[in-house]
Image (tube, rainbow over all chains, first blue to last red; front, side, top):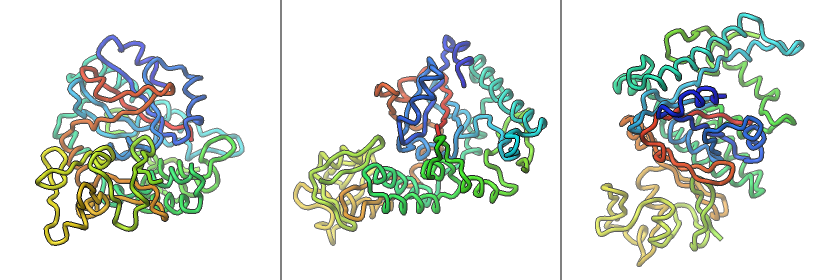
Length: 228
Length: 137
C-alpha cells in the first residue's frame, strides 16, 4: 500500500515500517507475500504496538522523525469509513462516498510524500506542543485490557477456549474503543475477516460516532459517518 | 511448568504455579521478564526503585527469590494470570505509558518479519519513519 512512496523516498532518509496486528502469522503471510513490499513488514502477534502507542484500529500510523521523536502521534492512516454505506445487494458504495474514500487516501499519501521530501519543514509536521496536544493517552482500564488481551490470545492458542473467551471479552469491555481487540478476538469468518453480523451490529451501534477518526490535516474530508 | 508472557510470547520460568498475588522468581528471571532487578534500595528499573515494605518484607523477598506479583500489585501495574496460575502476563501502567508518550520519544519495540528477523524501531534512527499498522482480519 505504501510501496510507491517508499520507492520514491527511500534514498532520502525515509522508511516505511508496516506492522501486521495479527496473532496468527499464517493469516498475515499471504497478504505480505502477494504484495511483496521492499520495506520491512513486521508481525505483532500480541498487539504490542497498540499497548505502546495507544492504538485502537487499523490502519493507524505514527510519524517519527530522524531523532526518534513523534511528529504526528497515532492517527488514522487516511482511511475513510465509506464501508458504512455499503449496499449489500450490489456490494458497492454510492459514488460520493467512493470519492471521499479516494480523496481521503490521496490527501494522506500526499502529506506523507511532503514530509518525506521536506522533513521538519513539512506543514504536516506538528510542533512538539501541537503533537502533545493531539496525543491520546491510555487510562488504567486500557492498560489492563492489553494485559488481559495478551493472556487471552495465548490461552486460545494453548486450547483453553473458555478462559480465553472470558479474558478477551473482558479486555474488550475495558477498552470498548478498540476495534483491534474486538476484531482480533472475534470469531473469524470463512474469508478470514471479522466482518460477520456481530461486526456490522457493533458498527451500526456507533451511530454518529466514527469508526475511523478523521485525520487532523488540511484538505482531509471531515464528513460525518455515511449511513447505509 | 510456569511461564510469563512477554511481548512476543511465553518465557518459561522455574517457579511453581503462582497463586493470587504470588509468583516467586529468581533475580535473573525477574530481570528477564520485567526489566526490574533487586538492589539494596529495593526493586529497581533505571533510576526508579520500589522499596521492599519493611513490615512484611517476607511477602516480597525471601532469600534470593522475588515475588514479582506482589511488587507489581504494589506498584499498581496491570497483571493477569490463568486460573491455574501457570501463565502470567505483566503490563505497564497507564501512567507510565502516558508519561512516556508525552515526552514524544517514540517508544522502542522489536518485532519479527516473516522470516523471523527482529527489527527494532531504534535500528532506523536517522531516518524519518512512517510507522503504519494493518491486519488481515
